[in-house]
Image (cartoon, rainbow, N blue to C red; front, top):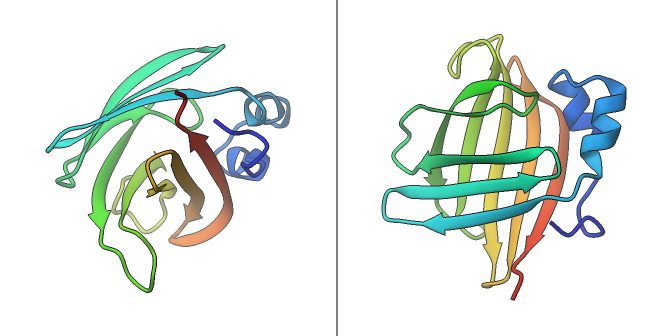
Length: 145
């Protein structure tokens, strides 16, 4: 992850329930992601000093379990959103932090992933409470050669 090009995620982390001190630590934690795409989804491995998590994001909208933004496991679904208005296609992942993916009062952690060429992956993240955005940020990941 390119920490210098990424925005602070302290507000996002606080909105999903991390306490202030943990959010401060996680916000500047170096992250390495290994991502492989198949016809059915993305296989993602996230490595930090705190540990390694591997999960799959199926493209068909099916619900799977992934590591939660605030710890533990959360249910998620992912789907492709086509390009529009000059924006590239992106993979939108919605993760239920509290409630269920379709409940009106849920807290949802949403990640919108898009590529810029072959070397940069942008992850636009936001937290939705009762359907309204309350915090957002951007992570920039660059391919290591």
